[in-house]
Amino acid sequence: MLTASPVPGVSTISTLGREELDRRLAGPGLVLRTGAFSTRIHTRIGHLADAIALLYADYPVEAPTAFADFQVRLHRPAGPRHWLKPQVRFDSDGREPFAPLPLAQAYPMFEWVMNWCVSSRAHGYLVIHAAVLERGGRALIMPAPPGSGKSTLCAALAMRGWRLLSDELALLRPEDLQAVWKDLDMPSGHAYAKGLRTVKTCVGSEWCRFGTQDSTQMGKDLERGLFKMYAPHKVKLAVSGCPRNCAESGIKDVGVIGVDSGWEIYVGGNGGIKTEVAQFLCRVKTSDEVMAVSGAFLQLYRKEGWYLERTVHYLERVGLDHVKAKVIDDVANRDALWAELQAALAIEEDPWHKPKEAQVDLRQFIPIKLAEVV
Ligand code: SF4
Image 1 (cartoon, rainbow, N blue to C red):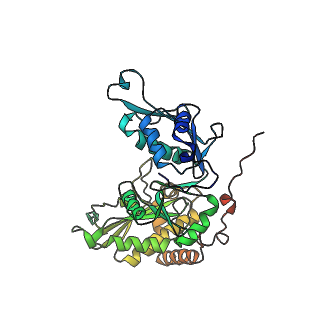
Image 2: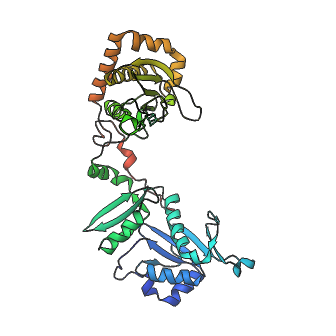
């Protein structure tokens, strides 16, 4: 639920009066404005009208004929269900996306419906599952998975004077994204890039009794060492602390597995729609060698791979022997490839921190203007 402050001269639910509120809900619809959106609400459920009157008292309402972004109707089904274990049903623009609920849950359903309308249709915004509070003109955005305590923390902060804006969704305008990222001052995750995605690890010898190697440290070193690396296609790595392979290193572009004598390195795996098992490349003793071999393999792939060719398909085309010859047998060439990659990454700019230098097309942050229909 959002909270609002009344604006002088603007019609709100409380100024409308209860009789008119009921008339609109049961008739032409109540057009309720919540932030950037307006919703036309139809219902004849008395306790739902009570809750709207109480909890949305200071929210602006618009004329029944005004344009509304969303149309929602909450109603009691006819037939035996009207009397026996009564239910509430919801439909929006003729669609009924949710199963009916017990009638006593009409108000929670109304809140879910409002959130559903925004999250499924507000495509002009970046929608984040997050609680939002405000104090002193600054917003606090708390993104977290369901069940992690956002609503409880929100309620506690609201009781201490914070203004609750939402305990469910935060909407960011495209034109604000760069400023928000600047405030956060975080590196970009490159979650969408044709390049390094993540380096998955198991808990390794630090926390697992089976671990023979410190896979988390190795994973961090690889992720930091390869950060900002673009490639012909996405690249995923994994490091497991022992051959039990909990990080699934056998289905990654580069998979590293800890063994008693050091590390084994596998290449060309894929865990996607068509699972591909990675091929054994070599065994090394130290984490520096893991960095050098992985980096050299990826630099070779960057140079020889075709655009949109995953490592598995690159290996199919050139053959594992070709890679072994250049990365394992020819040590001087391996060192040269690894040095080449490090030099390239040293001057690679973060697209969020220095978008112009990283040649980001900034037109993506300009909102699309809606045409006037005449
Ligand atoms: S791969 Fe080995 S070290 Fe890592 S969590 Fe699994 S059992 Fe433990």
